[in-house]
Length: 429
Image: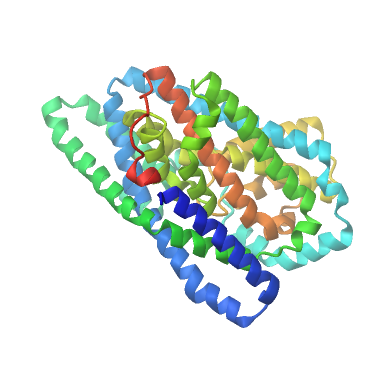
């Protein structure tokens, strides 16, 4: 049985088992014990195995990608194309979300009693986000991309700083003579190979890790919230599906030169992993393998575009932020003008760049957007109960957007490899 099939089995089994436990014994103490002492540790072992490879993988992939591109002029051209694609695709996704939420008006159906109940239930979590994770967005975001100490930045998981250092490091290597650059490239190449071997081992644990993660989510999820926030959830999910099925599929066909059905089929392992882990960073190793071995993207392009995308290209997150801000404005009776909605669009796109590629990474920055347009930031407590499920969905779209970007850049810079080869071990073994 191939890996992607085993992961799907683990996902479905975890969802069924967790939902059954939730329905029959959701409040029982043994359920909490199983989650704390069995499901959570197993899921965390899998996630940590992936997370521990992210920094060395990003550094090695970007360094090799930049060095492989070689010509600084070509590097700049690819960089501009990549960032332009990120901005356009993210803006498209946000527009889809804003139009849907304006038409459906899901916040209009939330009565005051339900609003107060949800605020009271999740206010503590919302305050924790505001105090502990409220990272601002502005000029300082770009200044902080330049690390004072790259080792410290790597240890802290500051991916924008790691990316900047890797880009500069790779560009500097291209300025050295070949005989001086080759030893370092050999070391970095060996590092990349070692990391991929670790990832290959970690992915063997994926079916069990995915089962544990999904069991933990579904066994504790407040399914009754779907009755209270049902239209909000529907708007987010339908928006994600429209962007994936229409916008990204058109971009894949027109700009990537690939049949969209084939693209989605070949990308399945990355998408399943993204849905299960709710993390673009944790999915990055699988995404790179899928891009190279299933979509035919050259390693230099995949190694350059995808690490950037995992941090800066957040189609799903931007759509989610836009929908949530307008939804909460509707709930609180704040009438946003067209100009204010344009501000929401711009801020959703920009703050998505600063979103950490980890579960729940978009929430602190979304509070910045809420405050900017005059919607009470503590209102985010209203949607926290369903955020985990929606996080899984939007992360899947984030990763899909990264793959379409890599395909687009590869198509415009090189000839995409004919992928008739056997499936890659890490990607879909």
